[in-house]
Image (cartoon, rainbow over all chains, first blue to last red; front, side, top):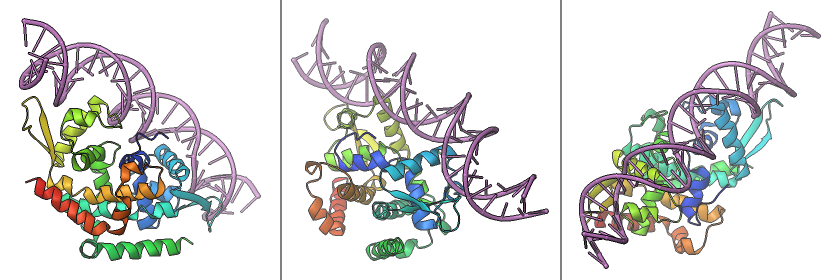
Length: 135
Length: 135
DNA sequence: CAAATTAACTTGCAAAAAGCAAGTTAATTT
DNA sequence: AAATTAACTTGCTTTTTGCAAGTTAATTTG
C-alpha cells in the first residue's frame, strides 16, 4: 500500500477512497451483514473477486476482523474494529450530502429529518451502540 | 454516470468515491488552488489525463464551475459550487479519522487539536467563510 | 449417509480506468 | 519574434474492474 502524500485527506483516501470499501463498512454497520454472501447480496452487486480483495484489504488495514461465525464453521463472521466503527461520522456526512444533493430514495433514508436536526447526538448514540455491541 | 443503487452512501460514492475527486475539492477549499496547473503541482501527482477527466466530471456533477481567471485569459478559474462547498463536513471527518488512525504528518494537520475539540463550530465557521468568499 | 446445497473463495479473460511521456494550441511574457 | 505558460489531448502500458465459471470445505436434505 502506497501513501501518496502525508496529507490526512489523501491518506484516508488511499485506504477508503474507492467505490466499494465503505459499502462493506455500511453493510456491517447499518445493515447487520457480516458474511461474504450477505455482502454479495447487496443491491450494488460487487464482483466476487473485488469483494474478496476488499475484505483482505480492510482486514490488513485494521478496519475489520475475521472471526468464527457463531452458527457455522463454514461461515466467517466479519466485524468492524474500533477503527472501522469510527468511520461512522464519514458515512453519516456522505449520507447527509447525498440526501441533500442526489436523487436517493426516501425509503433508503427514512431517518433523514431527525439526523439533520440532531446529527451530533444521533451519531454519538449510534457510535456508542456499535461499540457496546462489539465487545 | 451510473447509479448502482438508491442508497445515499452508494450514490455519494458513485460521484466522489475515488482517489482523486476529493483531493481536487481539498485543493480548492483548503489550499487556495484554482487552476489546472496548481492542481497538477500538488504532492499526490495526479496524471494530466486523470485531472482533465475529473474536472469534467466534477463540473458535470455540479461540484465545481469554470470561470474566467481574473488575471489571464490563458487560465481557467475553477471554483466550488455550494454543492461542492457542502462536501466540507465529509472532508473534515476524513481528516479527523486519518489523524486518529493513520501516520499523517502533524505539520499537515496543524489545527487538529482545535478541530477535535470544537468540530461543529469550526466547520460552521469554515463553511460560512467559503460561502461568503464564493459570492 | 450419499447427494445436493451453501459459503467463501479463486481463476481466467475481457473491458475500463490509471499512469506516463510526449505533443498540441492559445495566450502571455521576454 | 521566440520562449514560456496554461490547459489540455494522444498513444501506449499497466493496473483495476467486472463477469462467468470453477474449487473446496462444511452443512443440509431426501
